[in-house]
Length: 464
Image (cartoon, rainbow, N blue to C red; front, side):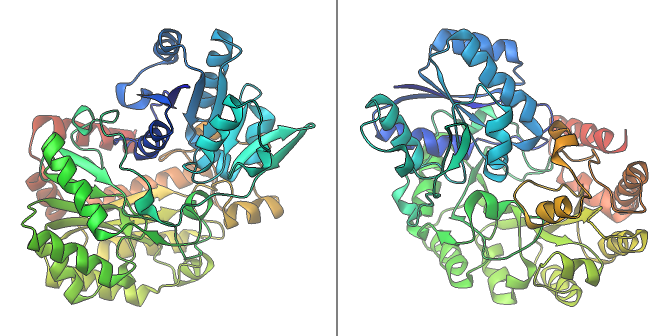
């Protein structure tokens, strides 16, 4: 079958990188003898008219749309366009939003035929077989599938892949990293060109606000280090990649695995720069691990800190403490030259102004080079989302999903207005970044005019 995988038009996502999710699906479908193409509208700043032109030209049998919550309306429009062009096109959505809100997705997106919850590498090829073979086996056997049956939304058991080495590398020819922005994460990088990789999936922790469990589940699964090294060598040979961004949610969870990764890079004389851009847990770090990471090329990582209030950290179920955060950030700073970015969240339910001030003050106290202050978003499917609905503090029926993005306040705690939350976020950024050591450090990391322009543009987005 002729399949088009789509990242819909979006001007809301500040991070645009080669789409590994669609790349993996493309490889799986190709291995099952389907013709596949990928259209990343967010990367090319394509509007819906250009998407329509592409679909009209390609004449696909299947259109699969990756659906983030902030792109709710755009994803809906993509499905509508496909059906308007040809009512026989089968439309499928997958990704964070349908994983967290399957019933709402199928109820409100009438031109979507099917959806998937979680990982779709097992279920999607089976669904295409079910379509192509004219229902020769039961649809209930398609893992992770969400569908309509007798006016009701049905959800099949998810199909999480246990051995990640069984998945072929992403179809890199369809997501060529050289065609993506030069500074995909936070505008900073060390060596060009850059490629992202994922070496593990899942998260065993129970943070109330995090959507990882909804997407990849609680079971932590890893690729073998040999498999990861082979992909790095492949990307070096094919594209001349000099820097890798590890997009794992828990890359440092197993120390022995990270040590093996570092030692094999050194043993095989693989000279790369690498960073953990999606965040690591500080409580997994020690001196030996940090030194080996730095020796093998790690120059930067982000760390999930979230709050400066012990009460809020406990409510988030983060399983760490302020004491550990302070201890580990100081360890990184005193042991290595690895540059740290702190991830902080503001506006979490039950937070007070005092809690938020504690978060800002913690960010100023820690030896960080960068900080990202994000507004709290009640993500569909998370524990805190369900709690807010139960307490009637939040209603999905009155929510504009398109507003689910950084710098747009969709929720504020009791006693703090959305306008005040916006002012508090601006205050946090201003107090952190308008300090001479931070400014000088950022200037040292700028390698080109384009990079400087990107940084200036992002600061305008924050303070406008």
